Image (tube, helix red, strand yellow):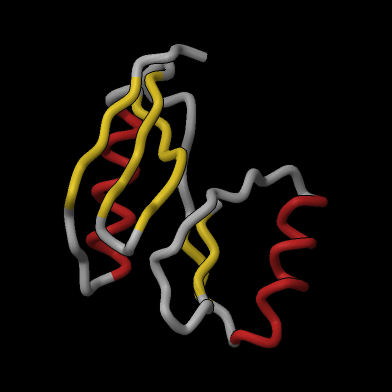
Length: 91
């Protein structure tokens, strides 16, 4: 993986628009590495279309279980502080 990094400031109120933005960046060769404060998206340079990102929202008490299952299935979780209710999972 490259050391080339990119930060974008954006704010979304719609999961589908946020996901479309992230996956367009994936198609251009930028893997989402972290989301800070719900609006600063940090990417690292990769091969175009190497990654696809999913956003999963779940009840807070079920999120840890869902995260563990996702990891067992081979998904990589993306650190974020995007969700004041702690109900979102970026994969």
